[in-house]
Image (cartoon, rainbow, N blue to C red; front, side):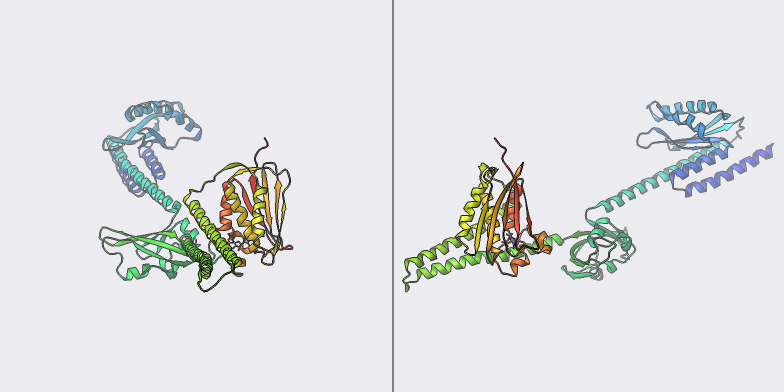
Length: 533
Ligand code: ADP
C-alpha cells in the first residue's frame, strides 16, 4: 500500500511538471483552458470538468471550457450560470458550486464527487476549475496541496494568456487604425524594409500592399522629381535622425506603376508629401520609421489653376484697359480735330470696354462669393424668362452681323421664382458663348419648353461644337477647351462655371448636347416653375 501511494505521488508530480511546462508554453487562451481542464481531470482520475472564468470587466463568472461532458448532458450544465445572483464574485461562486453539485448528480453519469480548484492571483479569483468524479475517489494525503499548486500554475498561465490576448487585441486595434487611416501610412523596419502598407497608400500609389510588404523603401519610392532638398536616402546619409528624433519631410512627384491588376496603377504622375517619423529604442537606436503619406496632386492642380487664373485675368483686364487708354489718348490729342461721329464712336467703344471690365470684375466677385460660401440669391416672384431672353437678344444682335437670332417660347410659358439679375447673367454667358464659338455666324435659336414641374430653356448655336474628350471639363472653373484656345478667342473660363452655380442655386440643372451630323452645341437648363394660382 505504502509503495503504491508513493507511485501515485511520483506519477502526479511528473504529471504536474509536464503540465506546468505545457502551460507556460501555451498562449492561446481557449487551448490553454482545454489543457488545464483535461490535465486537472486526469490528475485526479476524474471523469469530467468545467472551468468558469471571472470576467475582468464585469467581475462575473462565465463558463469558459467543458471537458468530458457528453453533448446531451451539456444542456444540463448550460443553465448553470443563468440568473446567477449578480452579487459579488464570492457569493456567485458559492451558488455555482451548489448548482454544479446538483447538476452533476442529476446528469446520471454517476458524478457523485466534485473538486473545486480556485485559480487565484493574490486574493483575486481569476476562475475556478471544477472536476467531477464517479465512484469513491480516494485522495492521497497531499494530493490537494498538489492540486492547489497546479491551480496556481494554471492561474499564472491564464493571466499570461489574457495579457497576450490583450496585446493581440491592442495590435489588431493598431493595425485597424493604420489600415483605416484616410492618409497613406507605411511602416519600415530599421533596414528600411516595408512592414506595413495601408489601403489608402495603395490607392494613392497604385502599389498593392502585398507587392509592397517586404520590399525595400527605395525600390518602391523612386522620385520622378523632388521638391524638397532631400529624400529619405540622402537624409539618412546625412545623419538623419539626429538625437531628438526630428521628423523628415519629403515632397515630390511620383510616377505610379502601370498594371491592369490595380485600379490606380495607371502610370500617372502624382504629387506626394511624406513625413517620416523615426521610432527609437531606449538605447537611441532607430527601430522603425513610420511614414505618413499625403496626396498633394489636387493642391498642385489648384496651384496651377491659380497661375492660369492670374495670367488669364491679367490678360483679360489688360485688353479693355489698353483699348480704353488708346481711345482716350487719341481723343485727347491737341493736334487733331475729331469729327463728332468719330468722338461718338470712340466714346461708345470706351463705354463697351468699361462694361466688359465691369462684367469681368462682377464674375470674379461671384466666384469669390461661391468659394467663400457667401453666394446668395436675391429672389423675386414672377420672373419672366422669355422677356429676359428677348432683352438679351436685343443687346447681342447689335454686336454681331454674322448671326441671326430666333426666339421660340410658347405663349403659356409660366413665370419662375428667382434672381432676375443672375438669370440675366446666365443668358448673357450662354449667348456670348454661342456667338463666340460660332465664328462663321449662323442661327442662334433660343427656345423654351414647359413641363409639369419645371421649364427648360435651350440656346442652340451652329458653331464649332465641343470635342467629346473635353466635355467633362466644360463646367469646371477656369477651364477653356482647346476649341477656344486654338482659335484664340478671349475668355476666362468662368462663364459656364458661374452659369452652372447660378442654375443649381435655383434648384435647376444645366447640360449640353452636340450631334455629330449637325454642327454646333445646344445648352439647356431647367428651373422649377411657379405653381398655377
Ligand atoms: P470662356 O468662354 O470665358 O472661355 P466659359 O466657361 O464660358 O469660358 O466656357 C468654357 C469653355 O467651354 C470655353 O473656353 C469653350 O472652350 C467651351 N465652350 C463654351 N460654350 C461653347 C459653345 N457654345 N460651343 C463650343 N464650345 C463652347
